[in-house]
Image (cartoon, rainbow, N blue to C red; front, side, top):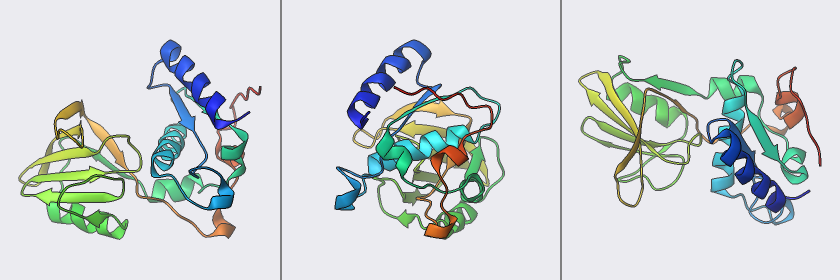
Length: 194
């Protein structure tokens, strides 16, 4: 019925099914749409859920509430056009990656601390994508991606090694191009309501 009860249900399901299967799709607004203040952390959760839904072969559970699904979202095509997939071993120059990030309207900073930012220090590129709770640290060996890891903003310590990541900016579209959340769902989706 509301975001709070959906959050509790999401936590219960992650205990049963695991974090790689269950995603939370909250409203993008901090308190209410009437205040027009978007919440960055909710934007990350929404983008993670939409990104998971684009993986056609995987089984996912999305937990949401009426306020969240009432908001229009970008189409799958728009999301895919703005997604940069990086893998360990990919041949890519740091300068080329920087060019793409600037085209995606990421801000270049000294140290990343919020989504939509990136930093470059020699052969290391930190990117805070809207597709992940934690920023990515990409180590280059020449013009090849050597390793990709998530890391903690406060301690700067690595958390998990990744073989492939999706870098997604804050995808925005004109109102006429936005679609219903239900139109984004795959055809064989099962819907449960409380």
